[in-house]
Image (cartoon, rainbow, N blue to C red; front, side):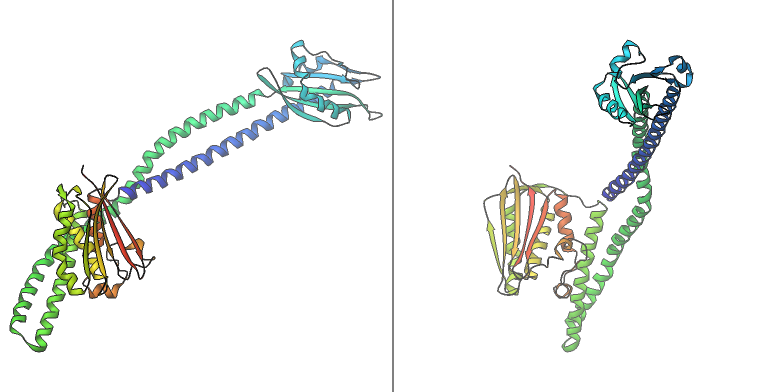
Length: 421
């Protein structure tokens, strides 16, 4: 599927958006519930402190009426009352002495003697308590005469939040799984109209290219007949028409190749090839063209390198690269074609001493109809499709193609294919 990469990217974007929405929702739920539970715990503790303070009796000494805390609204509340010397006035249960003797409560007791109230979170065994340590003031002299400590279990807050986290994780995992499927479905549905339009365009290009061949052939035949009978100015016109028809034939041929490649209708028939022999044959074929342009075409073959490839397509690939190099190398320049083997791969390099490719154009040279130098390419008969075809041939053989170029110094194209042992 040609749109597989676009489908994966679009589905990934939908999926990431869904994950972000779920993450924000989970965070909002967690923070809201956490704040609500903490507010309830704080209110319960404040209520318990208020109720406990009412049971403190202040005379010459401080005493505490524990019976006053039998109200169900202050259940699970534990109280200790100390006099100003730090002696216990009320006697908590033995199991609670460890709670109130926690070292973390030493500083709050000292602060209470100075007239400050402090809330401290302490643990006792597996339970967690919030302990409010407050000063007891004489209502007449307003001096601190004792210390009131009220402890209330808050483990239920952490337990509730832990349960909430488990539920949110489970719900989010299910949501993410369903969201991944929904993202793929949405992306597929979104791309379907584009895929259909592209398929229609591809079929149109293939059909139009095929239909253009016949009229172009007829035009060329008639113009060549006119060329044989004409002379002078009319002969120049006829020759110009023949050249344009040849240019159109090349463009139609390239369009047909790319259209069939897009439609996966071009078959690759690999067979063991000796690259050196293929290159030698092409060099012989291209030497007259190089001589015509005043360019030296030189091979640099380094031992035998065999690949499993389609001979027709490999020849087409190398002809495109050699023709491009010759077209962009001025008279007196040089084009070097080399074959090497490195790390289990066959490398074919075509290096020229031409004008080079500007850095801004280098990332786009494999795009269809892209021309870095439109005027010069047009003069040389290029259609802007050759390198796109070359890239398709390399990809079809599971190879790689790279280009390095410096303006004014030349260009080097490296094709890497899996080599045979």
